[in-house]
Image (cartoon, rainbow, N blue to C red; front, side):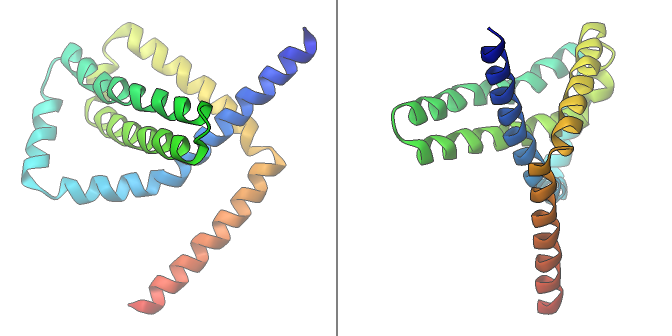
Length: 166
């Protein structure tokens, strides 16, 4: 039983490692895309409309992209299980990125109202605490430190290349 628990803990940590890397890799892209769309009057009006809704409506709107992306994530896992690992990974990661982008944007717009729902605020605080604990654990691993060195060097090189092109 102890070996099964260790293996399960290892697999869950590996899964969280991948999820955190994907979120971190796409976060700056999410912010850039969000900023781009926020320039459009229609998007601003839509965001103002959403922000003006009741906490219950805001909760429903926040959950929609998460629930809409779930079938695509399941299809991604199904494709992987059926012997199509690249297709499945692509579908899963695209669904994860899309759902995360939309949920993050909706959370940014509605967080003040959502936090007035006591159970949501409690769950949100617990989830953030747990996620930060996992993130700190992962950030302390040698694998993550190697990834971070590679990513920082890549970011510096890309900044240098784009600075030269201007």
